[in-house]
Length: 162
Image (cartoon, rainbow, N blue to C red; front, side):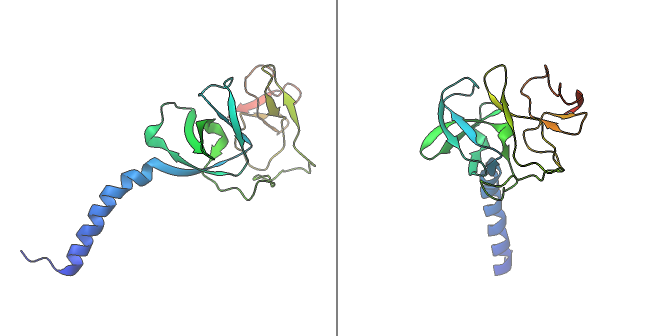
């Protein structure tokens, strides 16, 4: 059977695709949705190695992941874990702009310290669901609460959990 040049090129492309596509599927570019703690171990109370700025692009190799919610990454010669809910596939505009539009005029986002001593964004109005939101309050704000107790308590209660 005689194979012409165009068929040879086609078969070479198919073989290359089959060899390279598993490698491409395992690595993805993700972006941080806020300043993100890089921790030594996959636990919220573990030591923070450094803080990765908002809108930083990270290459995530999913083939080597051991945990569901924690992603092992390398950043600035440091290797550690970040919480996956603070990563997105959407490229953010820049570090200093909010990637989501506010639906009402707000001069800045406010924060509070929760019962575990963690800084959490206060419920805020947005036009679309922002990354990291855990509930929609009855007054239309998005909550970023880390636990259910007391979520949206000053905003009419929880309308819907996300």
